[in-house]
Structures are given as C-alpha cells and as structure tokens.
Length: 237
Image (tube, rainbow, N blue to C red; front, side, top):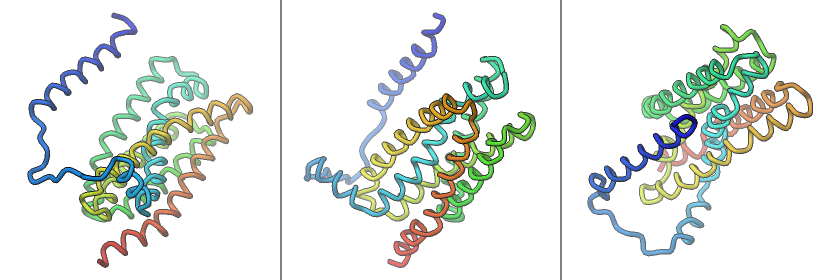
C-alpha cells in the first residue's frame, strides 16, 4: 500500500470506533436536552471569563504540542542533519511523551491544583525553548530540552481541561471545552507557518524558538495572575 497505508489504517480505526461508539456509548442518566439554539449557547459560553482564559492556555499548550509534531522532523533534518527516518522517530518520541503526560497533567491537577501544574509546565517550556534556541548538541542537551517541552505541553493540555471542569458549571463544560479545543487547533496551525517564514528570512530557527519562549512566559504570567484569581473566586463560592 506504500504511502497510502497510514491513511487507510487511520480510516479503519475511525470506522471501528464509530461502530463501537454507536453500540456502546449512551447519554448520561437524567440528561436534559438544551432548549436554546446552538448559537445562543455558544455566545453565552464565549462570554465566560474562563473560556477565553482557557482558550489562550490551550492554544499554547496543545497548540505547541501539535506545532512541534508537525514541524519537528523538518527542524531536526535542517538544523542537525538527521535523515528523515531518524527525525521521524525522534518526533514520534516527542509525541508519545506528550500524550502520556496529558492524563498525568489531569491527575496532578486533581492532586495539587491546575494552576500550579500549568505554571510549572509553561516555566519548563520557557527554559526548554531558550535552550533549544541556542541549538545545543542534540544528545543529550537538545533531546532533554525537547522531551522536557513535550512533557510540559502534554501536562498543560490535561491541566487546562481539569481547570475548566473545576471552575465551570457542569451544564456548560461541554460547550466551553468545544471552544477551547478549537483554540488549540488554531494554536497548532500558526507556529509552523511562523517558524517556516522566520527560517526562510533568516536561515535560523532561533527567533522562532525565542518567540515560543516569550509566548510561554506570557502564558505563565496569565496563569499566575488572572487564571489564579478565576480559580480562587470559584473556590470561594
């Protein structure tokens, strides 16, 4: 099947999941169907302060993970001269770490709170992106920097949804998470374009990685100020 195989396998897995979901999944007992229109519910959810805060956090956390998944092979091939197979395998390692850390981030949020987990994750991204911007030797420094960022971005993604569940009334959690998920997709779309543009202009990835560090620093500041106040105000009610 050649290059078609990954797409055919993905299609088959999705088809199997669709059948299983149809046969097994059920609405929660006692669920009341909404009576207002979709646009009305979207507008109401968009006006919540936690919605735009979580959108920004998830755009950085999940968006950063998606962006690296897309762009890391090209970066490793260009910056470190790896062959395509080696670059793809290292990208796969980055993805595996991020995916594993996503539920871990949710578990840590239940134990210590979402704000500390998010703040720690963004701080790790600031340091990791700063180290990577100087293009250190790949092993072990570069590998540790990228795997550290993978763990931080994965845990931040899980912590964001833990935060939503904590500060949002149950009837609105689904709508808010839908908007936040869309923000994460947009967050993953933009950085590869920026990295490619910057590299095309400067023949260097440093500026793009410093921009990532600056973005993570802003997300860190947002987390320990505005988001913390939102979480604390909900706990006081």
